[in-house]
Length: 259
Ligand code: NCD
Image 1 (cartoon, helix red, strand yellow):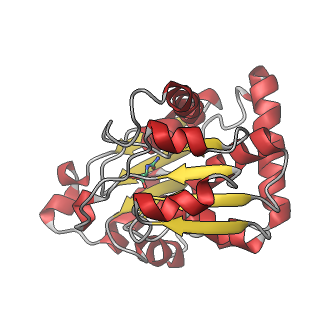
Image 2 (cartoon, rainbow, N blue to C red):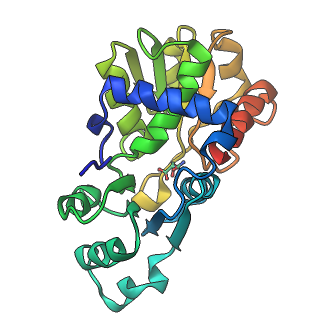
């Protein structure tokens, strides 16, 4: 049974096949309208989500399938003390696939090891977020025509960002230069030579503090071909409102995410 718990669960060929399918679906969505007819996906979320849960639901509906949403487990039997294993075994009776977001690293692997139905990890605490990485990689591929040999700067809450953990894993594997910056000063030496600047928010719910702001000054120093990605959400302090070009790019990424 195939699970996607870590980005390491997909090899390069599988990633490129997914890119090809995404392109085909973008060009001819009517061809896949019934592709998942009579199939059911369960969104099982122990942590908040807007984009991830909605994009899985929208994708499922666009492919002719159905969705059972438990977007807040506090309104499920979890609130009565049911453990992860029993919840997964139960939901696998109703669904063909489970998209799981949990609070703890390793939960998605535990769920996958039950082998009840395929599990997609939509974030396990500060562990990994492989499907956000697919979207980030696809965006980089569309913009840069490659996912190899690039200079990528990660800025933000590196320790707690599961999106950075998955994306950096795969980029490092494919011979990219990755720079990791926790502060404003850290970013300066890398910003000129970066092909991609990847920012994340402060994960206050995991005990982090501080701010990671992309100011007009940063933008002026960016390489003119550099793209800026952010998985969202952001607190609307991360990007200086005068950095309009960057804001526009981020909105485009946002729209893409919502698709
Ligand atoms: C991220 C997440 O939940 O890991 N958002 C997302 O899924 N697009 C990023 C975050 O919460 O900072």
